[in-house]
Length: 104
Image (tube, rainbow, N blue to C red; front, side, top):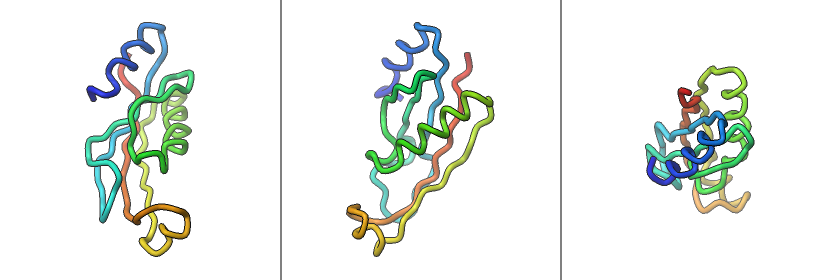
């Protein structure tokens, strides 16, 4: 949480709502550990990381939906090891990411 705290405080001081995505589970290899966080401001700014860049854009879209609806989401991302090389990733694996709005 420390890595995103400064940005979250700045966004909140401007009156923006914020969603936080947290890695809650990993299977096989994963670029970020359980507990890794990505914050998304109402205006679309990002802080932190849940995957080292692989799924951040999709998580950001879901975070904006969470801000619009107020309903948290559990997302799952994964790729087989043999498919990972084909798309330029060093390894496969799965992560579960929980996206929730920060209370105002």
